[in-house]
Length: 367
Image (cartoon, rainbow, N blue to C red; front, side):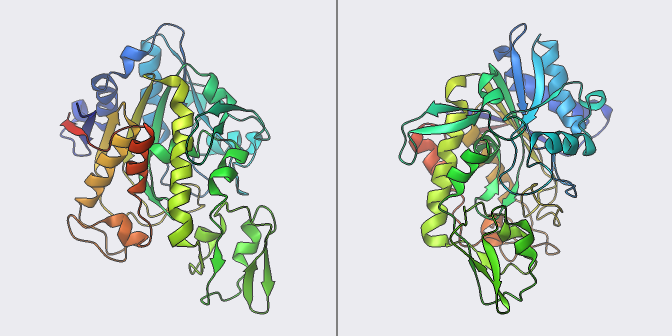
């Protein structure tokens, strides 16, 4: 039997069909309330957005999930893990401050914020998975400690994964800095001949692995493969080694996603927001022009199915010529190949199926 993915269109006809009403309806249709009992501690996993970014999920949407959890007797908290790169969420204090800055105050979302891996990203537990790349993965402690979880993801492009949805939100978002480094460790970027020596990348490398040699940037041995320099380059002169590194990175990321939910079997719900579909991750300090129009909201109990459905819905749209989308603008064109032609983002689906994370085949049910 195919996993069900529930879909609510962005189109509305009145206050009884507002997106906030649809969000609550999707929660019910997907059966999320059935898994929550009185006094259950429920993690609401989302991305609070980097300072300067404007495409992250709006706090008022998170509020709808919080209120539904409380109606079922659960005790929700909003959470994310600290970043590997140097930004406004690299430690628990600044991460919390950034969340408040971006609107996730208690008065708005009706729930506390708990940074899942602590102040210095040291709070984690090892989860045994015994897969091809990892026997154990590091999962942020407060996420692992929660008995239930709702994963709220902004679906968009990503410079090394092709796209970011529920799978990436689980993998990167539920891992401390050390776990993120383990996933990225095979992605060793190189500077192309396009480099103009502007030194932007030097400012953002968390380990000082980039120097300037003559008029060009040079990435040295200390590189940990975090990939922070790739999107920060203003002319895209830094690229990972696509053919050998990216497929392995995607597999490692998918294994981490498996580890994030391994001990929560049947107790995780997924919501993907197909709005403000930008070419890059919300970790950037800006948001690029949307590659397609807003589509709607999806809910499912299967992370692979919801990402596969999201991927298909995006590709059905007409692409925005006034964006970073280079090609495949027509209906049915692969928009993520149009952004990052060398990345096979669908490896997230095939490998996710292979390791038992979920199914890429789904039944789309319109709400």
